[in-house]
Image (cartoon, rainbow, N blue to C red; front, top):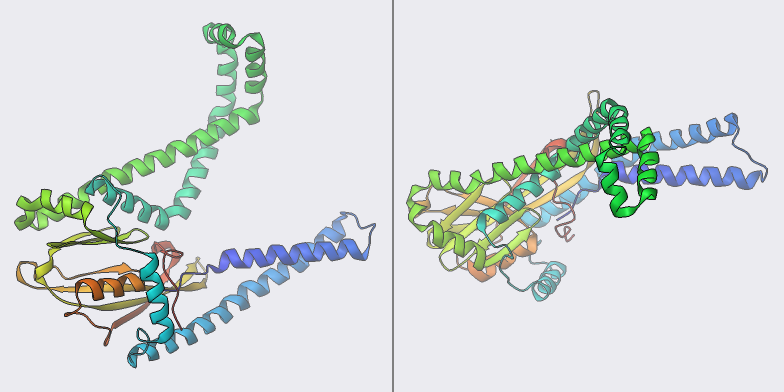
Length: 365
């Protein structure tokens, strides 16, 4: 599975390298080179031009290269030669040797679901949440720093100051008085406190929302209400396959899955077919006026078709491609195969994608 190679970070790296090279050349060409306005402007102008060229041409070149790889990948899937190729089978054998079956390390089902829900939400909202927390921190620091600094200095002259003096001596009171007289010091403390508090509240809200996920699933599946204790034990102690915030647990009686938003449990005897669903996301950075290609993200899903009492509960779950193959071979050898996998591809903004980049193996082409 190929993870997103975010163009922004790579292009900024190139930009910094080229700017450094230009500065070094200026220094070497004239050993008496100084930071005059003209040389600084020239250096910045050249670096900006290089940065613009990188931001325009590098993403386009990467997009064409990834499109060619995708068409080649589709041809391999249609000829049924991707999963059976020697290189893929070799990597799969190595994966099986290095990843023995195991169970989850969590103590409770709800605790594990909460953790995965929080990870998924932070991966999706990290940019927006960071900007909001920094803005709120700056606002509170600007409003409260002067007042708080004066208040703390006044308090050091009263009982709190006497208490600190009795524990640490007069030097500690003098140090704190000088520290709080600096508006920057108080500003920084208020800023950091506000940012940490906002992130704490954000994660607390996510945790409270996550507690509803399992209960909502039980309400939609009342026939499993009497078995909820058995389901919780099965989830914690059976074979687990984890991929970023995705999780599939397979036991002798149930299959459990969680995709960061929705929880699934079906009776393993009600599974009638297992096949691949491969999704390709073409990811863009979007602004008001334009969008820039960021990269491709492939997701290998196992699609479970169910019957019996779970006939309306078909679902798919994202895993690493080698984990999916391991599940097919070890648990569903008679009702699964690699023939005619479903393929979906779509464009998506990076703002709406909780990337699993770095947690999956790349395409074997």
